[in-house]
Length: 85
Image (cartoon, rainbow, N blue to C red; front, side, top):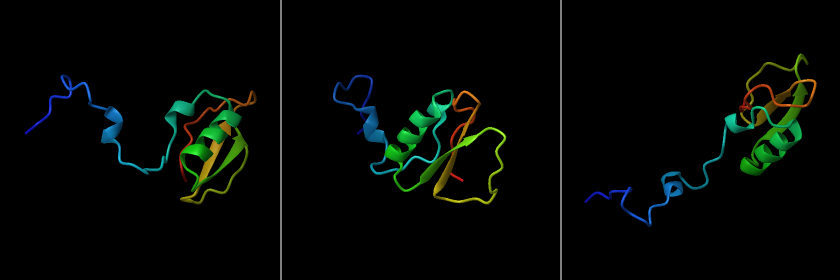
């Protein structure tokens, strides 16, 4: 038996997302303030450490599964999609 979700008023699209799935990238934060991005990342995935980094700053290049660089421009606006690594 299949359910026609277009006709089912009880259908909730959020039910398609697995519970307790942690975010690993945040494309919606591109163009927002670095401070806001930091807060969202910490809230959505408390298993990672997020750091605001100014564009052009040297950082260690190793992959780290619990780190997110939040790259910002001179105005403090996120200019890359924050991603774990």
